[in-house]
Image (cartoon, rainbow, N blue to C red; front, side, top):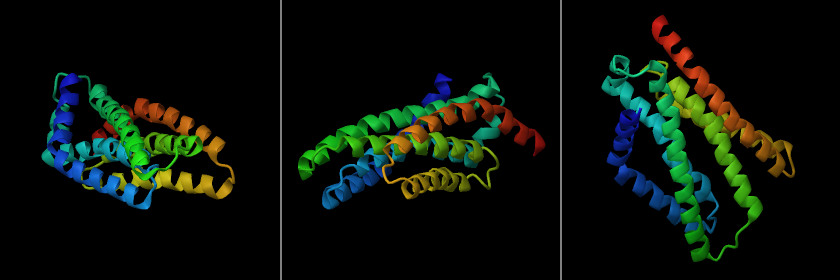
Length: 203
């Protein structure tokens, strides 16, 4: 699995100029509109969703079918993607908190514990419900892989909008759904190999 993780990290590193440019644009916007909180989700999701992009890269390059012939358990090939996305999410979260502190200082915006918590729970919802679904459906077919990114965004976005609409004080609901979403991430991760290889055998 270390070799698979190294391969995917190299793919991300090769795209660093694009990621850096997008990250700098996000920071500039946060400074301009004086909302440093946006960086908490933006930076972490920018990195973690690159994990789905590596699956699309595997599909387009022909790596994915060939990978099944490697001397690695088939389940580990799938698990690696979920673990990789979690690692990217953790790195992105740490980087986001650092940038949030810097931009807050530059703009003079005071720290808000409630806003910080809500953004962290929103991040968990995107990772737990969106990213896990995106990874799963990206494996379905090469032709439908790009749609997985829309799935990864639309599912958590619908949940978040529902929480905002139905709750005047959404912090507790965000906390509950965020933590449950991460539980769902690991459930989907555990079930994914059987689902994915069923699709492969069927096709």
